[in-house]
Length: 420
Length: 151
Ligand SMILES: Cc1ncc(COP(=O)(O)O)c(C=O)c1O
Image 1 (cartoon, rainbow over the protein chains, first blue to last red):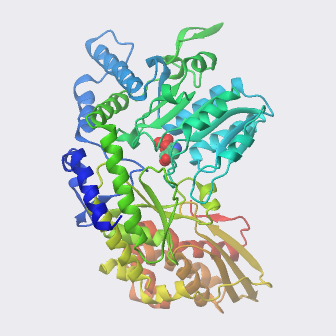
Image 2 (cartoon, chains in turn cyan, purple; image 1 turned 120 degrees about the vertical axis):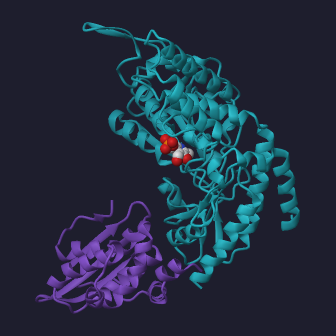
Image 3 (cartoon, rainbow over the protein chains, first blue to last red; image 1 turned 90 degrees about the vertical axis):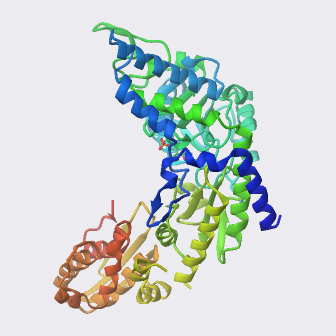
């Protein structure tokens, strides 16, 4: 498609989603960076927050602040109700069967650590194998390495092809009687690749192997239904879906939550404590020791409400248009190579410029008000696979526009000028 | 281009980045040290050979951004033939150059060509790129064999 055709297609999709109206909900997007309009293309690191989320945080602390499930007073009742309602909100958002399958955690990292601890210690035996992939974020590598050291389990790695997609034949060969768990990303934070989850899960289940999904980069872009996916665990971070930092979600099938031992011990996760022994509360409370991030959970609920005002299809169509427009525009920059060209991607573009280090690219882009991320993106094995120490990454959200892509391209030409 | 960018990416710096000097190993090196910045992946190995109390030869290898590569290249040029005990002094002067507020012109003079790195001060996130080679050199001269890291 020609650039102008693409541009008008992108415009149409933007109107269908009302991107202009959407942008006005995010106060930070109207601000300047280095005396230029902020162009925020670092959404995979964290997304910006709509006013509704900021208001929810403020409201909790100004009107309802209390601990939950204990004080016999009005504020305690309000805070508890709002916290419980947020859990139900997340349950519906993910299509989970019951709100007891939703555990509030700090983020994706803690969710995966929880499973590695609680599931790994109880359900994996020495000599068993955990299958992950080359695409994984360090958060879905290191907890398993730590578990392997403790339990004598082994890691097996599904390779990726030149486009950055998983090699499914290799995955099938890795699956076997020794496999105890598959832990795989839904979408790669470094390349954008969306993995064929249904197939991955079906193949694992055929062998009776449970599957954990790292959904950190999928949830901001795709409507996820854990019941349809039939995954055993699904993890995501609130701050990447327009919610606050410090709150995230682990979905787990009820039977695992019942079978797994607690992750941490403390208040809120017990049914009774005696020095002779303690009995644990039922899930989800069994896995939420201590005072949780109450305001964060409530504001995550607000983020989901915000997201639900928009049609998931309109978001996806617009983002795909934007991705295509960005992909084509980047191709016009001399010496630029995109890393990660799988057909199915979330709008993340990782690239290298011939002879110019990503760190220099990032600094120059920043001087033009454009926020990107440079480095290994917490995916060093993946960078190694593609033979680059680092890339520059532009990660888009539903509020980005084709004008912002144009600004990125202009600034990249400036980068080339500096190093000409 | 904005002026602060022009200050950072001076022609001298770009020239050293394009064709780094002393960019090789040193088979008869007395000391070798490697420095690593885990945040951006820059990695520099510095080789030094002594003659008595002098740094007879210095070279480097590695990968990194323009600032890091040019800094390493110009550093090896500047320290070649200097008394070993001047290294510590230069290290601190360079550190001041890329971080601190006021610099005396006398100090700038002592830094010679290295003064082109003054532009780094406007880019706090790039200070470590410029100083990684110097940390690595210092480790080599002090014979700290362990890998140095900026973190
Ligand atoms: C794919 C993926 N997994 C896990 C994480 C870790 O998320 P958090 O830092 O919010 O725990 C990230 C965030 O960078 C990610 O992109």
